[in-house]
Amino acid sequence: MPDLSEYYQPQSLTAALELLAKSNGKLIPLAGGTDIVPAMGKGELKANGLVDLSKLSEIRRISMDDSEIKIGSLTTFAQIETSPLIQAKALLLADAAAAVGSPQIRTTGTIGGNIANASPAADTVTALVTLDAEARLDSIKGSRRVRVSELLCGAGKTNIHPQEIITEITFRIPATGSKTGFIKLGRRKALAIARMNLAIIVTLDNGKISFARVGLGAVGPNPRRYPVLENSLVGQSPSESLIDEFAIEAEREVTRVLGSRPSAIYKCEAVKGIARDLLKKMFSDSGQGVV
Image 1: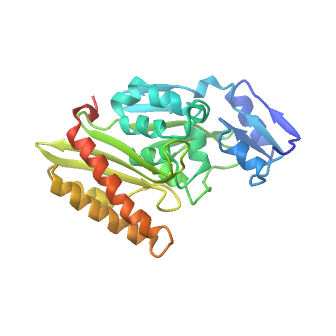
Image 2 (image 1 turned 135 degrees about the horizontal axis):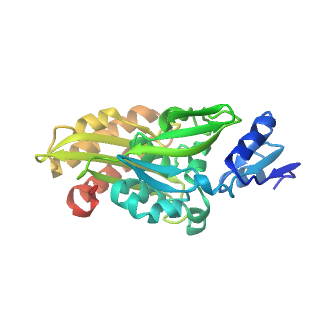
């Protein structure tokens, strides 16, 4: 860990925002620290000091407001994984949080930090992008809302300004009866950074899929939705043949994105397997539905 000339632990969001505004970008916010601390130890992240957000209980919460879920940015993966509200209304996000690292990382790491780190393989970010979630960013000048997908602008890069803090993530609850799911392919079960992850939401009306969202992570620079895959599901009835057709379409999309990269052969084959596994689970498991 490098020497830091400044360390602050504000007791309110306002105090934290004032510190960042006065620092001219020389201070960076610290949430769970599961990404920042190792990066600083390796010399990959430069800063004069840290603004520790751990005391800001006002942005550590999960709530529902009409048709929206609101999650404070300091909410941990463990809190999301075990939240009855998230499990009932957005199971794909609970499953994504459960897939993150070790129990220690899930207890410490935060959803806001996962977004800000902008990893191509971030599990909860793939789920949030599929949910079309928005992030609220606050500074002393005010606040703004940005879709999570638009906040990401490359591996390790975001459109977050130096004086801003992600304070809240919101998304509309999928329609009642919708099926949602998340699956991750890692190097090994524990502590694995995803080689690929997949999130899906489908709504069925009269036996046919009327709405679909599909997100993939660890394929491009950031997790994102794939409209071609979504369109391949809409209007179809759940069946073995649809699952096979979707898996083949997923392979085509991954091939298109990765081109001749060294990982392409492996990932193009792997996506077929995780696509089949996830859709089979979603179509067969009555407990997957939004209530």
